[in-house]
Structures are given as C-alpha cells and as structure tokens.
Image (cartoon, rainbow, N blue to C red; front, side, top):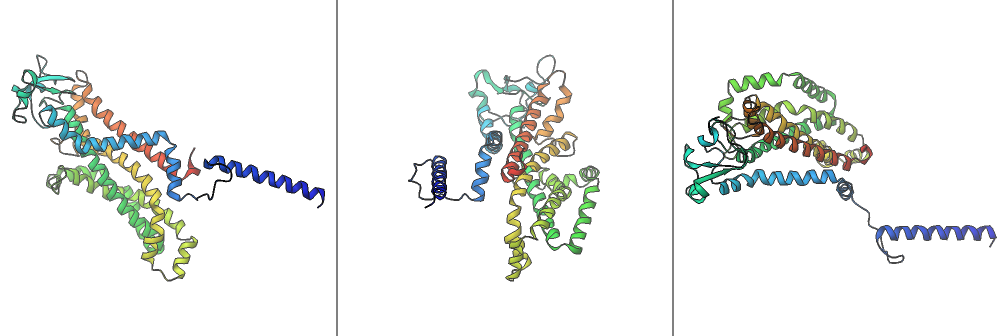
Length: 366
C-alpha cells in the first residue's frame, strides 16, 4: 500500500475514534458501550429548549400557583378567617375617628357585621374579633384579601374563556381563508377589516347601558355575573388578529409537499385541513394564547375600573382597583394590592409566551 494511502487511513481512523469519543461523552456512556442513539422527537426538542429558559419555567410555576389560589384559595381562606368576601362590617370600613377602612393585619370587632358571618366564627377568635389580612376595601368593610382571591377567579375566567372564543373563531376563519383563497379569502378578509375598524369601546358602553343587565344574569350556574357578557364582547371583537396570523401560516402550509401528496391520494379538503394543516398550527396557537390571556386580564381590569365590566358587587381585580383612587392619599395600599396582582399575572403570561415562542422557533430567539 502506498505511504500516502496509509497515512490517510491512519488520519481517518483517528478522526473516527475522536468522533466516537465525543459521542460517548455526550451520551454519558463509555466508548464501545453505546448500542444506538435515539433521535429526539419534535416535542422533546421543544421541551429541552423550554426547560433551559429559567424565567419561563418560573413564570409557568407562578401561573400554576395562581390557578390553585383562584380555584381553592378563596374558600379555604374564608373558612379560616371566619367571614366571606361580601360580608359587610362597618367597623372595618368606617374605623375610628377618621372613618377610613382598616389597614393590613387588623383585628376588627364582630359587632359591626351587617349580617352575621359563619356561625360561631366570632366566638372562636380571640376577643371576639376577626382578622383582616390586607385590611378592608372600602366603607362597607369587605375583606380586601378575600376579594383579591375571589377576584382572581373572576378575572381569569374572563381571560381564559375569551381566549378560547377568540382562538376558536380566529383559527377556523383563518384556516378557511388561507386554504381556499379566492372569493372566500376575500370575503373573510373584508370582514376582518370591518371588525378592526369597528369602535368596540362605544359598542361596550351602549351594551352596558341597554341589555347589559339582562346579559349579566347569564351565568350557566357556575360563572359570576358579567363574565359571559365580557366573553361574548371580547370574542366578537378580538378574533381578527389570530385569524390574520393563522391565514398567513396556512397560505404557506397549503403549498407544502405533504399537502400536495394528500391531494393526490384523494383526501378531501376538510380532511387535509383537519389532519395536515391544523396540527402544524399548534405552536402559534399556544404562543399567541398565552399572550392573549394577559391582554384580556388587562382589558377586564380596565373596563371594570370604568364601571363597564364586571358588576361592582362582584369581586374582580378591576373592581378592587376602581375603589383605590378614593383613598390614594390615606390608604394607598388599596391600589397597591390589585395593581401588584394584575402586574405580576400579566408579566408571568407574557414571559411564558416569550419562552414558548423561542422554544417552538429557536431561529427567532435573540
């Protein structure tokens, strides 16, 4: 064998040995002990990228904790403090000579309750008082801490249900417009443009002044008054943006080889959209949904602050925030607590959405 060939074989063998050693180190095994290297699936790769983002992981943990508080935190806290979020206690709302709501960590006499709280709860507490952890929320003396917990449920109900409605309509119409194109695409695009320019706030004001009280009584037995009204309004006027995103995605997907192959084997349009197009929209749907939830938490808070959202008697973060300006000089914490709740929740959903976006599309990560 020529010397040059021998040298090339020696170099090639050395390079292969080095590659094998690197594979062994990466796989955690010894050289010669690795039988096969399994390929990672799409979702496994997404999870591996996502778990490297500690901020997104922390945001997800915070959201899970918040959901737990919203579902079971309120009733548990009400059981231990001995009263509910709507129990009126004038001693807590018109406290002392200043007649201001009591501050955080106050023990208030049970004699001021307009309606008795839980039976025997006052007798079980020392000196016949009950604890107000974050103070009272106004002149009626409702417990700020309890209303904050119960308000989390109301605000999240509006945000999650509105997001489901918006994404359902947006994905459906966006997929149809992008797949069929032609006059169907033109008609849906014109509807999108009309929805974008419609003055939604004026419609909400007119709705609350006319049929709002009747719609607010639609609760299906599980939701608070006003939740379904906001969900309907947000779904009607919020679907256009996800529809535009999904239309753009579908316009690209319909030209892919797997869609052409499905057409060639005789698959119907509905089957192609259901089995080949919509599954590829899961990533943008998940990412946009997390960002949309944060948006609707802010919208609910803003409308309730203006008196156009949830019924003022129902605890929600927007309603709690609306009473704060009355006491911003004397009891500023009445704006602090709901403000912190809204800020931290929307920030968590936005950070989670950013982490998911980078995990699904690593090329877009900065």
